[in-house]
Amino acid sequence: MRRQYRWLPIGVAVWASGLACLRTSMQGPSASGSGGDDATSTSAGTTGTADTGTAPAIVRFTATPATISAGQASTLSWTVAGATTLSIDQGIGSVLGRTSQVVAPTRTTAYTLTLNGSLSAQVTVMVTQAALQGGFAPTGRMTMARTLHTATLLPNGKVLIAGGSDGNGNPLASAELYDPPSGTFAATAIMTMARSGHTATLLLRGEVLIAGGLDCGASTELYDPATGTFRATGSMTVARYAHTATLLPSGKVLIAGGFSGLGTAQLLASAELYDPATGTFRATGSMTVARYAHTVTLLPSGRVLVVGGDNLETNLASAEQYDASVGTFAATDGMAAAREMHTATLLPNGQVLIAGGLGDDLLASAEQYDPDAGRFKPAGSMTAGRYRHTATMLQNGQVLIAGGSGDDDDEPLAKAELYDPAAGTFTPTASMTVPRSVHTATLLPSGKVLIAGGFKTLGLEHLASAELYE
Image (cartoon, rainbow, N blue to C red; front, side, top):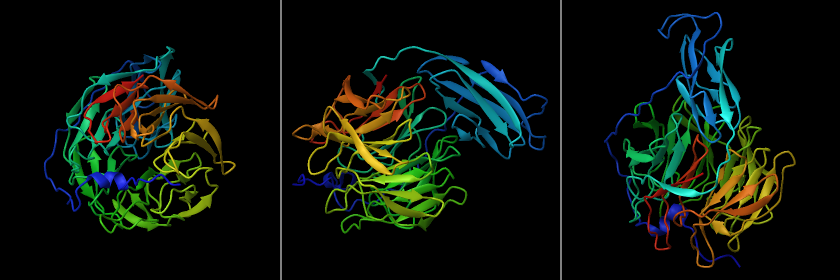
């Protein structure tokens, strides 16, 4: 028999109905950064400055620091002239319009900066190996308690925390930045609307797309880390909340599913694409099933895997793939267990780990999706059943599962565990400093994981605290 409670979309059950979007015009402080020159490379045979009108040239390409310990970060920075295309290898891709990139390699790595497809320069980040000890420790507190917020790692290494709901269930327009070196949060600009149940997606050019939210219509906005401000961008084709957003290799963003509004909300199968070049949305093919509380994962092939969720009548075991080249969804093999509010994590081998969630009951089971075979297979069981938890791929290839709701009374959990893809097993690790559910988890360039906010009791005591897993 199906477990008899509804996770009303993004916590609607604890909110007063009829909340309107809170429009604001306040702006916060600008973001800034600095760089160094510990390791420097310039392209052979090229000279020039970054002044407009000069011949294409790589003036400077540095790594600061040039030598790090495993788990630490280095900042790549550069000065170029006459760039029409600019990219860095090692999976980073286009960096046109930017001047720095934080990296945290786990072994000594050479990075090549390529200008206009022909000029290149290379720097090497040396990594000395040191074992990391798993454990949680408190870090700075957010400026206010929040849950159902978003957390986005920015190119400068800071983390943007945006929106969510406060302890009274009111949506928030506030946003803040976490600075890993100082371990502190500081307010940044206020969003144009208070949002909860929205999505936040880092675009290739470094801005963050904030889309939708409960009772926020089809509105969207962009956060610019360079200026520390939000500004409105094009509207979605339909109002959405509890949807998903996925950055595609093309730089466009796929928005899928969710609900269209409050009260008589319609569950959506529709999907749409955001084009950063034009700032507009357009409809694309619809999913085979309307769903919310599902997961989406960008596969190495460039396709997007959609798994599970809920259709308001039952939990879903179905899965499908979106093919951007034709703009359509197609069903793939289904899971062994129907589940919602689970996690989906892309593993180093290209397969996808599906863990926990709610089905007919609380689930501890896990499954693994093989894109080559197009099938799911068992992947063992977690040490504790949980849903609304987080799953974070660590730099050592393991997956950190943290918090969520579980046990017999569905109270938030402090328990955490690690999944080892090589062994196919889950093992307990240190517990968080406080129980959390509906929190966020962000892998930092240092290899640490920032855990922020959420609630710690069924009475929905919201948290401003944050902690780091190392």
